[in-house]
Image (tube, rainbow, N blue to C red; front, side, top):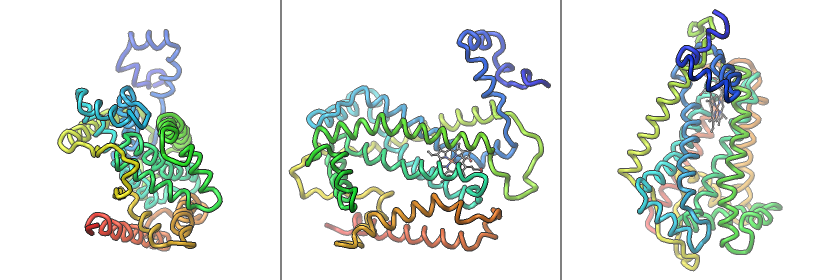
Length: 366
Ligand code: HEM
């Protein structure tokens, strides 16, 4: 079988597809794509977490683009524009809900994807590039949430932003300039909202795309790591298309349906309009930031830098540098006892901090 015949796309749609692709000068690109060959273990369902993360990003882009048609980035109009889109447009609430639940699920899915690649030791040489680009993607995701939270201009978004800005401002040396750059003045007003909006819909998506291209460049070049059990290994490389693409489409439909149903039955949160004079409003931290909030509250005064910069920065540096600190080629978790114990202790401490944070913010009456 030659290369031409092995292209599955030719088999699916001979004739018209060929002519159309030729006319659009896309034949070469499509042929390259559908002739990608991968190791057989890359075609198993075990590798679905990275695909679901990618699909959730697509859903976030699509639902965000729909909402942008009606959104007005000005403090006097933002809340009403969101209110109109949610309550007057068909499926407005479902679209906002899909956007809301998709980023929550994305954090969980990317966290599990990171955990899986960690346990399987796939961060080791030669896959350091895949791991580091993944860590940067992971650390970058919260920036979308931080900038997105302010956009509806409701009480929760406004006051959560105030808390975050005051934490950023307390960072030594760069805190002040970063707050000024984000806020554009002494108060969180129209300049801040415009900057958060531009960051959220232009700068960050472009940066994210670049990071994804880097992640996939390394994956395509190196292939996925071999299974840990050698008897899982099958010899011949197989066509990536259409198996992976079909699975991705199926997962995309199922994820969209599931998030749509969840949004229909449990509409996304949307509080009262922001009132910058209401200093009695205390925003509750979201689940993913509970441990950080707790860290910040443990270290106060001159030690606050430990909770805001040193510990979170140290953890981020540990993640990035992991492939250079754990250099042995051994990938089996049972043979990597030291690194597994250290990771488990860190996860236990972060979970414990989150539980304390949850009890303090959600179970204790203020
Ligand atoms: C939005 C974020 C991300 C997306 C869309 C994404 C996507 C993917 C996809 C589609 C794959 C191939 C299939 C699979 O193994 O699941 C993959 C593999 C991989 N990813 Fe990610 N990823 C993301 C974040 C991360 C993070 C945070 C890490 C770790 C810090 C990471 C590390 C890896 C590694 C090491 C592999 C290779 C796994 C192997 O060789 O078996 N990725 N990623």
